[in-house]
Image (cartoon, rainbow, N blue to C red; front, side, top):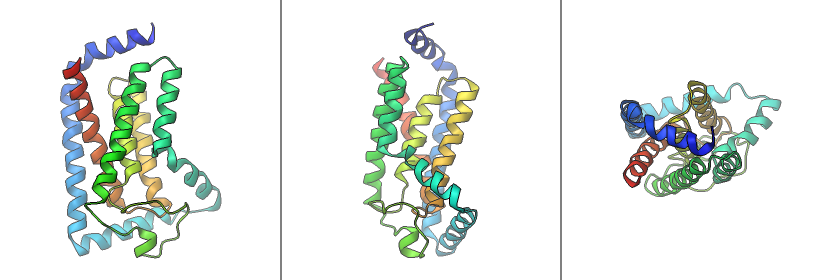
Length: 210
């Protein structure tokens, strides 16, 4: 079966996945809403800080270097690399989808950062930073948004193993942003939620455009 056949087959089964996509959209909305609730309360923000400290408690030399390198899977470079790999494998339509949704998620997250100005953990809490200083506000995590959006599109019509791996990669990138000291847990929660909502929106737009 060719890549074109796989794309056609995925379109044919799309209606059966609509309830799943509604659930994904609802989950994304809850994540964004929940993260904003965390930001609105001083007590919850303190809990947010403590949760980040727990994630960073497992730091060690070898894992620090590995995670610091792998966290950029959610960057715009990760988008280009993922799209290029999919295109080289013959999945050109999926490569275009990933490039579009990944770039779109990055732009949306950067726009949101100008609306919610929040200092990063290494600025406000003195957390040791393992990577170079990123630009923009702490909320939301652009890397988490990009990864969730890309993996949402990739996993949409994939086999169960693809969906599981996509979910694991999303969680890893999100957790890595907390681990390296540049985000709070609520930042990545909001980023994942945005990514899921954008992936759902992209699927709806693509279906309308045929």
